[in-house]
Image (cartoon, rainbow, N blue to C red; front, side, top):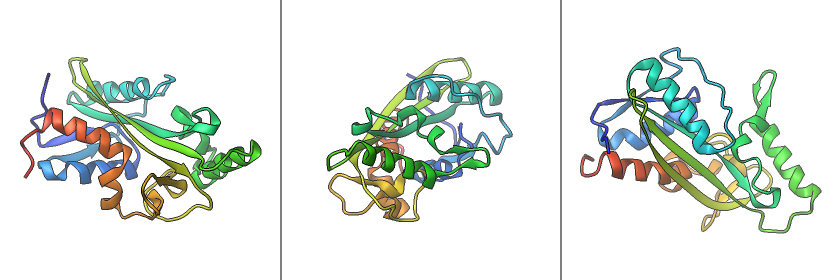
Amino acid sequence: MPRFSGQELLIATHNAGKLAEFARLLEPYGVSVISAASLNLPEPEETEDSFVGNARIKAHAAAQAANMPALSDDSGIEVDALNGMPGVYTADWAETPDGRDFPMAMTRTWQELEAIDAPYPRTARFRCTLVLAWPDGSDQVYDGRIEGQVVWPMRGAEGHGYDPIFQPDGHDLTLGEMSPDEKNRISHRADAMAKFVADCFAGESA
């Protein structure tokens, strides 16, 4: 299985929040990150109905366009009482003609739970699938998750996306109330990244 040996890794994202998380998580391994946005790479259309399918689309598009290894993720929140929705459509729930509006998406999520009088705790999880794609067309896949519940009202201005309404199991704070370092110790992305690091950087941390 190929191991990443460079000092700069292309992250196939146009999301500044995700890029910052990757930068923090990879810093101990002496790896800096660049984004697909910084290279003016187009955002491919995500046409799959699974996290791994969409992550593969993004990773391979970036790896081919830049001719270098590219790491992508597809992530989202699955709410049990909503039959796992929004899931792979997490970002779609936030789309507006003027860009993504996550407070609107979080409000919709809570309103749908209220509409069906969902019992408490309103269990949910964040899922993350990472794909490391190589220019030769091969790839490696790493899955992560964090269990918790949806809470209301929104709490915290840290993080991004649905973080202000997700309270992880065993914690009193939402992800939106946690510092970046605290979140990065427990998040779904951290879980997937730990598996990626074990595969590609084992024994190489500073």
